Image 1 (cartoon, rainbow, N blue to C red):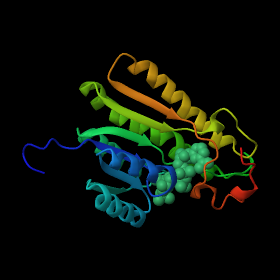
Image 2: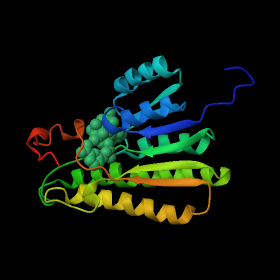
Image 3: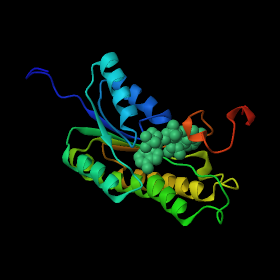
Image 4: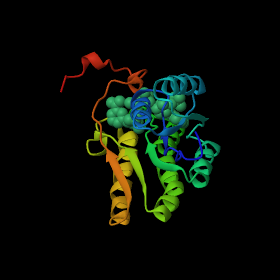
Length: 208
Ligand SMILES: NC(=O)c1ccc[n+]([C@@H]2O[C@H](COP(=O)([O-])OP(=O)(O)OC[C@H]3O[C@@H](n4cnc5c(N)ncnc54)[C@H](OP(=O)(O)O)[C@@H]3O)[C@@H](O)[C@H]2O)c1
């Protein structure tokens, strides 16, 4: 990059090591964004980063962080608070544990809440002051159709996704009339690795 070239905008994408997050990474790279890719599996992030750099020529920084932990969330917050080049935050990282409410352990409940609800809220809180000050920026929160249809066995997961939907709607109200955008995405069943280990074969689900 020479002195005349403006810096590329930066998209921070959590849960980019697979599935929907990896697709967001590809799409933002294709639109000319540099990327910060967040997840626990650094090897996957490095592999994807190399591919996107080769294909689109964008800079990709892997940020290995476990969003079920305080240090993991704090590491991403620090990046969002300090890098004024960040124009997009995609709160996509998510975890699913199927089981009746009383059959899941308190530790399972806590990690679902931390990754799916606390992390997106804290990261939005870290990104927003800069976005508001610059009157520009976009937060994309990945909720789920379970936010409004809490099937048996998905109670805590669904509750976290209701939180994400409500958080997004509330933030939309608060940034109305500014240059900041907040979007909630509400996917239904999508073929990704989130289904691995849940004891459900996607082939057994009705096509609709
Ligand atoms: N697939 C569906 O049917 C569906 C439907 C509705 C909503 N969604 C939502 O879509 C989002 C993406 O899910 P997906 O379907 O693409 O599943 P996926 O392929 O399993 O991706 C989940 C991503 O979240 C990351 N993640 C999980 N726990 C994490 C942790 N503790 N710290 C940091 N990152 C963590 C994973 O990375 P690491 O394992 O490398 O950390 C992975 O990159 C989730 O929020 C999910 O709830 C999915």
